[in-house]
Length: 639
Image 1 (tube, rainbow, N blue to C red):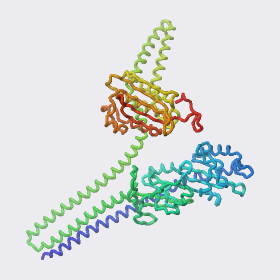
Image 2 (image 1 turned 135 degrees about the horizontal axis):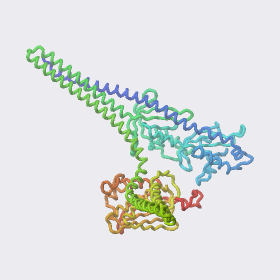
Image 3 (image 1 turned 180 degrees about the horizontal axis):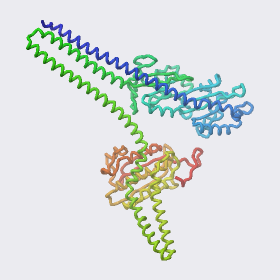
C-alpha cells in the first residue's frame, strides 16, 4: 500500500534536514579543529615576538645608569658648579650615542631642564628644553627609573624612552634619558606570516608590522585619556583614529575572534590585513604594554567549507541509498519480473551515484592539492620578487653596458690592431739595433694601453654597485663620466652633444654612481629617439636654482627626435613600457631612473619641447654649502 502524499513529503523534508544538519555539524567541527591549530601556532609566534621585543629593550636598559659613573656629569649637575663642563659632556654623549646606535641621550636637571644632549650640534637640539611634563622624568625622580613610549616633540620621531635617576651619594641630582628606536624590530616583523602589534595601557597601537595600523586605537578613547595625552604630548597630538576592530567571539586561553575593517584605506601587504582574525595577546613584563598576534582565519574557513561539502554529499548519498532500499522492499511483493527490473535499475543508480561521489571527492582532493601548490608557488614568487627588486638597479646598468658592448668592442679593436702592428715592428727594429725607433713604438704602445684602460675603467666604474649614501656630486664630473661611458656610441652615431653648464658649477646632494646611471639612461634614450633623423644633436643644460623646496639642481636633456606620443606620455615611467622595437629594450630604464631620483628626494619628468623633440627635466636637492653649520665638508672636484 503506497504511503500518503503528505507522509512522503514529510519524509523527504526530514531527509533534507538531516543532510543539511550533517553538513553544518561537519563545518563547525572542522572550523574548531582549524582554529585550535591556528591558536597553537599563534601561541608559538607570541612567545617569539615577546622574546624579541624584550631582548631589543634589554640591550639599552643599562645605558642611562652608566652616566652616573661619569665625573663630568656629576660636576655638571652639582649645586656648587651648575652648568660647568657642558661642552665636554655634550661631546661625550654625542660619541656614546653614535656607538650605542640610539636616537639620542640627554641629561635633565631637577628642574626638568635639559643641560646636556647628544644632538647639541643640531639646529633642533634638545638643549635647554623643559621636559618636566614628561612622565618618564617624574617616574625617575620618584622611583629611580622610568619607561615611556612616545613621539618626540622636537623632531617627531617615535621611540622608547629609558630614564634613570642620577645620584650623588644618596642625593638625586638629575635624570639621564636614552631614547631608542624600535623601527628595526618592526621591519623584521613585517616579513612574518601574520600581523603583530604592541599596544599601550590605553589600547593605542605603538608598534606593529602593518604601518597603516600604527598609532590607531583598539577601542574609543574617552575625553580624559585624550586630555592626558595632550598634557604629556605622548603622541604629539596625533589623531589616534580607531583601528576598526570588532570582537565577534571569545575563545579559551584569552583568544578572540575579531573582524578588522579599515575604511578608506587600501594597502599592499604580503598577508591579509582585513577580515576575520584570531587574536592572542600577552602582557609584556616590566611594561604596561600588550603584544597581540593576528592569525587570519580565511584558510580555516575554506577547509571547513570543503569538509562540510564532503559531509553533505556523503549524507545525501546515505539518505538516497536508504530511500532506494525502502523502495526496493516495497516492490518485493510485486511480480518477479518487476522486482528484477527494479533491482537492476537500483543497482545502476547506485553505481552511477557512487561514481559521481568518487569523482567529486577526487575533484575536491585535486582542487585542494592545487590550492596548496598555488600557495607555495606564491610564497616562492614573493621571495623571488623581493630578491629581483634588489637587483633591478644593477640590472639596469648592465643592460646599458650590453647595449654599448658593440661600440666598446669597436673602440678596443683599433688599439689592439695597432698594438699588434707596433709590437711586430719593434721586434724587427730591435734586431736591427734601431733603439730610438723601438722607444717611440713602445711609447705609442703605452698610450694605446692607457686609452684602452680609460674605456674599460669607465665601464667598471659605471657597473659597480653603489652604497646609496648621499654626498656632494659636481654635475660637471657626473656628466663627464656618463659621456665617457657613451663615447663609443656617440662617435658611432655621429651625434653632437651640446653642454650648457651654469657658473658656479651646480653640486647635487645624492649618490654619484646612481646619478651617472640616470644620466646615461637619459642620454642613451635621446640617441635612440633620433634614430633615422638627419639632425643629431643632444642639448644638456644644468643650473642651480632657489625654489620653494630650497636650493635645487635642475638638469634638462633634449633631443631633436619626433617627440613623445600621447600614449608614451601617459605610461612614460611605468615598468616594461617601451616605444622601442622588440629586442631593443625592456622598458625599465625610465622606471629605474624615476625610482633613483625619487629616493634622492628629487623629481624626473618628461614632455615635448615647443621647438620639437622630447625634453626630460631632472630636479635634485642641492648639496649644502660648505660654509653652512650642518654642511659636511667636501671638495668640489671630488664626485
